[in-house]
Amino acid sequence: VKTILITGAGSGIGRAWTKGFINDGYTVTAADINKNSLNSLMMELDSPKLFTIKCDVSKAKDVQDMVENAYRIMGNRLDVLFNNAGVSYNTRIEDSETGQFEQHIAIHLFACVNGMKAAIPIMRRQKFGRIINTVSRGAEGGGRRNGGYAAAKAGMWAVTRAAAHEVADTDILINIFKSIDNSIYWLPNDDVIQNFKEYCGDLIYTFSLYII
Image 1 (tube, rainbow, N blue to C red):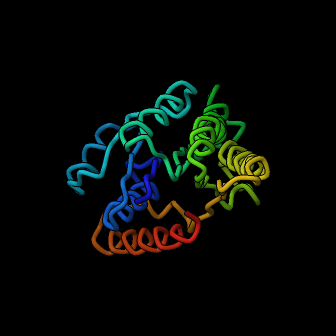
Image 2 (cartoon, rainbow, N blue to C red; image 1 turned 135 degrees about the vertical axis):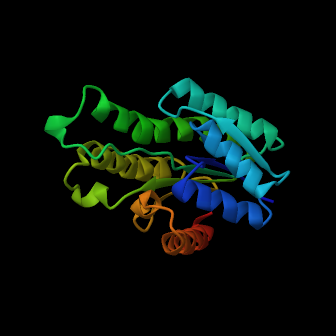
Image 3 (tube, rainbow, N blue to C red; image 1 turned 120 degrees about the vertical axis):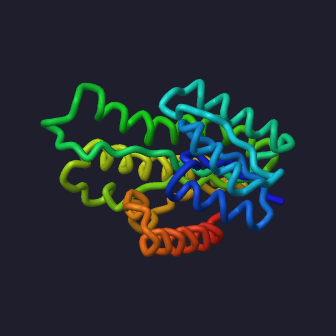
């Protein structure tokens, strides 16, 4: 049985992954900065195979502790890491507040790097591992009001390729996941849109099965 750690698991793509893997019998540690989102996930799924960790992925020590704790509570095993946590301020560069651009880099790129840094030694010891880093079409084309987001995702794309080369002599695979537009999860929660969100979540989960 695979053991899986997912960041940004309280909402959006991360929540869809968590629900899919739990429903299929995997053991999952869901990590998020929002404790209320994690609590609602626990209540919704009500599974002995689901664990939660509150984590601020912009802080290197939080990420290190998250990986070590997830490894421990899942029986000293970590098969799959999804570096998925993210944020977007939807602000033009000229209008961005001091530190916003840097926070994009910290939450996306540095969290990804620190997650891999903590997980790869574990995966080397167990001679198996999969790491999936969530990127975006914004990494290719940018776009208005998302310079920090686009730069961070482009960095994740590049470091994923580098890391994949570094573990090429092992049974550790490191890939990107460029999903359908995550903005669907920011839409209002009326019945029609909620059904569409659930449909997209099912698609995202199905696609992910091919890369773990």
